[in-house]
Image 1 (cartoon, one colour):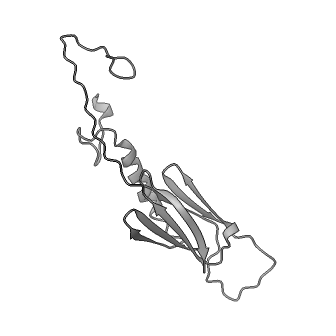
Image 2 (cartoon, helix red, strand yellow; image 1 turned 90 degrees about the vertical axis):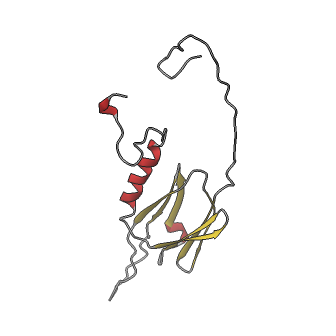
Image 3 (cartoon, helix red, strand yellow; image 1 turned 180 degrees about the horizontal axis):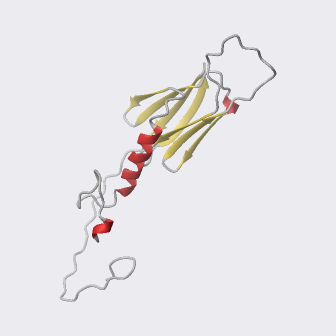
Length: 153
């Protein structure tokens, strides 16, 4: 690796191979964590289950959109204005929003339910598979040839 391509940061150890995507996730998460609207709770509700509760007071189910985009759970909200209202005080925020949560590999949404202004999203993580694989080690006196993709042989 040339000096100009050296990695820096917490994943710079030569023993951590292929973790560049985690470093990018941490950078994205630190930027996203600065936005606190709408407020939310995250609960551990079982061995491999989480409950994400988002306070979306004033939003109807058809004004919310929940998508899982690769490893992100994205919640978008936009209220539709119905008629003219005159507020003496407006303390319940109704502004459009987008809130993202980074999900660990394999986590999926089991169900989502809107009840009393709270959107409850149940997340499940499948049981991790433990694998052991024997790798054959060839021997020989010939230096393997390298191509543009990796090691041949």
